Length: 541
Ligand SMILES: Nc1nc2c(ncn2[C@@H]2O[C@H](COP(=O)(O)OP(=O)(O)OP(=O)(O)O)[C@@H](O)[C@H]2O)c(=O)[nH]1
Image (cartoon, rainbow, N blue to C red; front, side, top):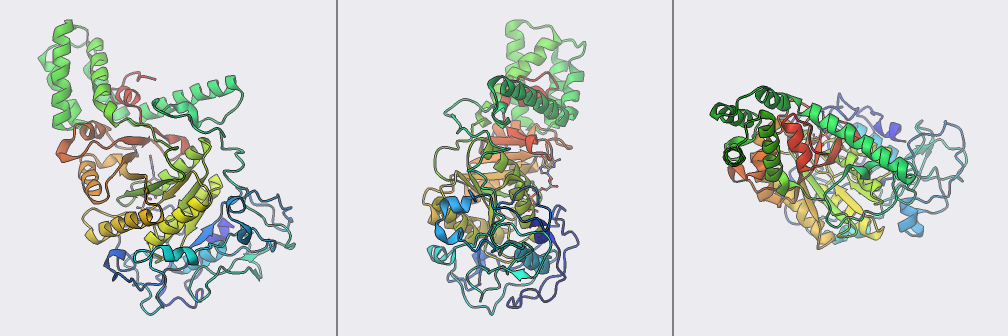
């Protein structure tokens, strides 16, 4: 199904009702290409009049798909759909006809046609009839919601268009052809959360308090095996973390080789800290404390100085370490923001897996309605993890998507709802206002939400990350950070700068750090591990 979704359609006759000129086809329909910074395809939500007359394409649910497609032509014997939808949504979604494979594939065609918001996409359909504006009156969306639940369509587009969602007046997501011969078997999405098969550890997190540990990323198994697996995973993670931060680590390591402990060493350490993006404030603070310890303990051994520095750095970073509480609400609504290409969507995909491993059911909201590839990317992650995705066609209103997703998440007793948003620079004020609107609208669906507002920061951006954190924090009140790409040219010291509140930044907790593109490359931030890796030492497990 997803293959079909991804299939790029020639930008031609697809959605007839869609007024806006279909943007040119995106050269990179694979969905993984980094997109260029661009203007939004529509007036930012914030710019719309209060009654916002844009017709939001109807929100649809792109159900979780089974990882492997059945061989085409093979009738899929309907595994009694324990799907999310069936579990939580009553009759309407599960019904017999079984065949309906709407939203998804069509989304492909829609996406295909409209999936080219590359340069400066067209304005939204001005002429289309107004639809329930989420901002003005979000609750109204609920009525239009019943996101059609679609069993994954077979890849090959065939002739049988399935019944489309509700509103056909809206360009919405068309229907999905399906190949299946027998209408009996809803090739149903293997209910993700309900059936914690491959991915899931199954047991809810017993979290209160303790610092994050790696063990949780291991699937549950017999105790011993799980323990071993956890140990192996941890070792592997530390190795990756160290290798990600190797550049900085080496520069510190060299300083301590056969070194005489004197003022020259402190000066070199100060330079190394500043070069690592730790900033002057953090460097001063750390070295002042280090000098004091060296004096007090009469340390003359370079390795011991390094150990002490690691302890001090750990203490310095500790306030940023915080366990992510998955049990505080149901669902925990997580809004994710960041500049373009920071790694938001990828991180959401990884986190979805991690949360599943914690025994939580996850629902994703494709709130990046600006870049078609972003939605496809999210759907792909959803497919991998058997997680449903709430989406709209291109040009949809991200706030509406967020609203619908939170609403659906509550109705279905999801554990976590993660809302992706389009990348934006803090200087794009109208887009920052749009982000604020998304946050407000989420709160209309659930007064306590979003429970977490995370900023994804590319670790390679160095000191510029501080400006990003401050701007996003001012705009939407961050509750946490995800720092990605620490495996690249990142120097890692930026976290020390955050911890020291450099440049007026609030020391926002760092929930996760990423050192690669694989799921296991995103792990909870643990101050001691990070300090060890940054200094090129053996890190503290
Ligand atoms: N090396 C490395 N690459 C990463 C990491 N996290 C994300 N990426 C890659 O960064 C690229 C951009 O990631 P996305 O998730 O698309 O970023 P985004 O913030 O959603 O992008 P926009 O939607 O354009 O704003 C992708 O190629 C990811 O695979 C990481 O920790 N390390």
